Image (tube, rainbow, N blue to C red):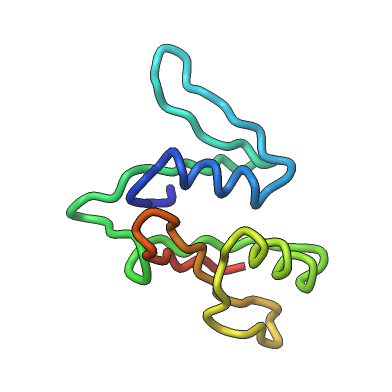
Length: 107
């Protein structure tokens, strides 16, 4: 689960971030999520227990080409937080377009 202040916009952002994402709906409910291969990405509203932004969820993705992945995420508004290391991971912030707050994610 990824906690964001505006779930519909968060879901749309992750749908753009993953070109192979398939939007799914739980039957009989108004809840949508993204299916990316064997992984389900559920984008839900923040609450008093779980915040968005730097205190929120950290998501890790494995990518084939880190340079292309970084360029793609930055083209969607992500901000680089920590440069790639020898373990090929880096942090970025996909900026929330309505509140201008950022949610920390890792790739």
